[in-house]
Image 1 (spheres, rainbow, N blue to C red):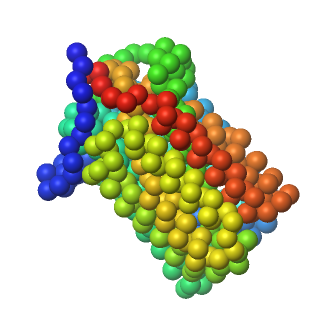
Image 2 (cartoon, rainbow, N blue to C red):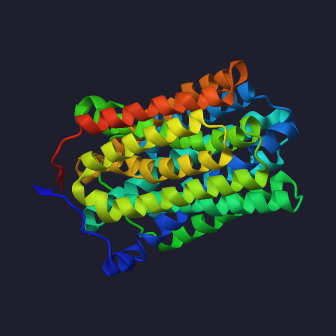
Length: 398
């Protein structure tokens, strides 16, 4: 059986939906997820200085993180789908909390351990939180994915604010990282108690998740959109603060303010997409996101003014906000195939983090951080291409 799936516009009933026991923990969990990266983007320069790490080496560590995340999504996530969704979501958040704590406390000789653990948490969160949200979205008929990813941006705001305040107060950078770990632990406990203790599907297939792309070639379109979106958003999480401080000479306070503005635009963009663009369908949403991000990224790459970069980040954040959630909305499979399908699309998305960090690090060291921002702009072309290839009408199979 099939039905056309066009979520209703948001309003008072949408607020009640967001507060449902099976939705609120997902929003809180993704807020804590975004908060870790909001803290990190401001403190990474201090982390590099503390451990004497170059841009090229941090790029290699990011590659390690992404490689672990891809392996987890490809091989581990399909074998955990027998867990109840409350267990899988809480386990995912707790894994990232452990990784954050290790990164904060480990000596330089064990850096790879912390980055590998963060990769584990990222991989699990990006599969199981999105599986839970995608199933809720179909069941409820509301843009849950857009709201959940909006909370990631909200976490970026609070995380960057906390990180900036710790530096203004002269605190050690590790204080901010540990704060993000505590927030993840709290939301993991909430998810364990409040997310319904039910299974997502009944599939016993634990094969390599990317095999879903060959069983259902239509998944390559959302995979392209998510890949390109992750490249842009992930690069902003890891390089935007470094660009402002290292290339444009901005202070930590200014860099934190700019990233907060970007995250606020990301949050508002996802709420706007949930209310307006999402009702027009994923295709129009993806095209608008790709074009707007390309324009904003280009402006950021050619200016010397932190203020203009801040405005460009506002445009970039507001428009790129809708791309990844709309890409996941293109996944059109029965419930019992959802885990492998989402894992497959997420796996492809994370493969970009394997090759992009060393390339961006090499470009930054060999040319400039400005050149690395230009590479990010190229990634927006994949979003536009995915939007052009997406179906005009979205029919979801129950």
